[in-house]
Image (cartoon, rainbow, N blue to C red; front, side, top):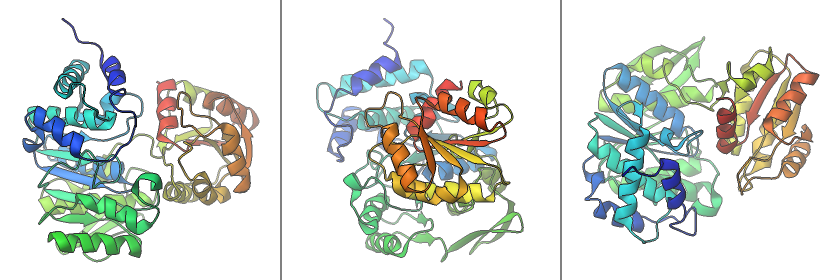
Length: 422
């Protein structure tokens, strides 16, 4: 008998718990035990937490490892266009039949017990990773770290904490120190941890946790340095200096993400440094859209897509725009109502001409376009409302055919755009 599609199974899994997010590890440990502990049969794990840069750092590590001929699993969330993007097995996205079978197996093992969607699907991913041979597993935290469903590996090879900033305060705490404490929960006894650039308040918490766990740290600015110099990227640690091309992922912040990736690769003694920097692919992070229906509408205008959604993400996008050749830049922006939209938009205000506000299709938690437009106006950006990203794009191109257009504000909006442009 054929299994239901993965979409049907995923929809059913969303009904297993009344909350989307309910941070605890108890349910995950229960289901993993019912599945005979796949988390104990994984290849060496590189576990990555942080507020910004997790995905880019993971993509660079994967590029470096795969360039040296290694097989790499990768787990990330959320997905953009299809759930399958979350699970990469030895280099390839999980196939539909394999995903459906795994989800069905996990549902049978879970029975009628409560479990969140992310917890159940993370257990399914662990099962997949335990059954397909690979040299490394790159495991990206979903939310926080200490109580995240991915935090079930007792002894990873390396942990990484990318820059920590304010986001998800309703779950992680309302101070930088509290959030850093949650991220630092992935630090394991005796396991080395790479630490990206941090505010002093956050770094103090991370260092205290590492000291309690006897975990050696590799901290940006102390144990490793990474910076741009005359159009090149320089990385230096106790093992020497690397002179490399700039990252192919756009934006000055990617230099520091590349540094964290290189520091991790140096710790495990594997991977090709230049490939890590120049071959990474990570969609919806200042991604230029060259083809597809939306690109055709854009015509000779530049069309970009970014899923950053917090104040640090706004600062990163603003810094990227500031370094681009001068061109009138218009935003198409939609966000969730749980995000600090003012903090996101304020850094962008000096770099843009206008903003078209949209609601995110199909998202109950979308911020209404009216509220996004008001926040933009409050930030000093000329703003109007549009019924969709496509309508907004047509409006911008009609007024300025040579514009630069950036669709931004949420990974959920980015996912919808990628589906529309497919």
